[in-house]
Image (cartoon, rainbow, N blue to C red; front, side, top):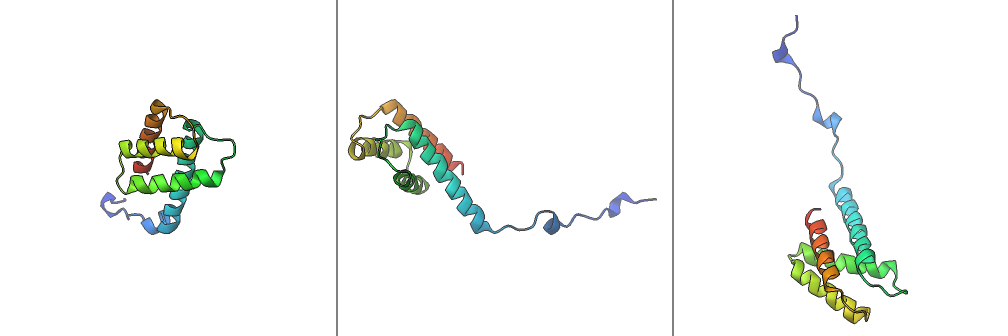
Length: 110
């Protein structure tokens, strides 16, 4: 007869071995940058000659600002300024607000 009180506990190291934390963090950063860059392609009025590298650089800068505490209003202002000054395009205030909300939510949720 088996005694239920002596059921051995599983060896967690063999079930879920440790993974390198740096690799996971780097992958998350890369995925987050791609998500943010995708939001830019959707929401911003971009010039035809814009490159993916420029978009990735903007994404990195904004992700860094949000991680340092920038709120939606600060991100909206940065996006408005970038759209007007860098691209010379009119600003759609509603689209910029929605973009800032999504960016802050994406970065803080990661």
